[in-house]
Length: 108
Image (cartoon, rainbow, N blue to C red; front, side, top):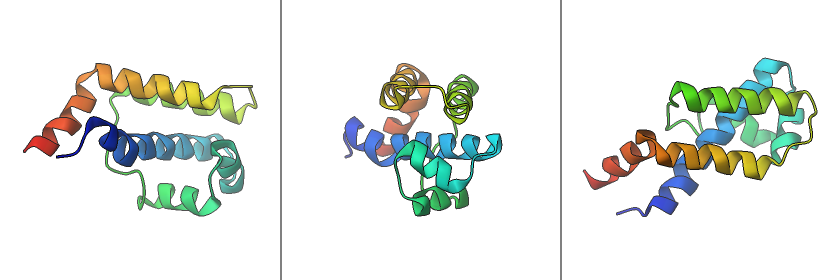
């Protein structure tokens, strides 16, 4: 049995980071710039974009919209507390049915 925190660390956070990376690239950021913004290696961005990392969750539209808004703001160079914004997205997912679906998969 995986604890909810394990699911968040192994599945949810990488999926959020992958979605932010995808949106940053759509905005016109280079992979190197996206890596700097997300404070990760360029190889991680490459893996996010190729689906080798962070691919386990398909986000509901309200979560996808929050991720898109965050990526646009990051691309525009706005000063943002990235950790806080990612936490808010994660909390929103846990409040909805989406995270519960992840937990139910583990119980099966």
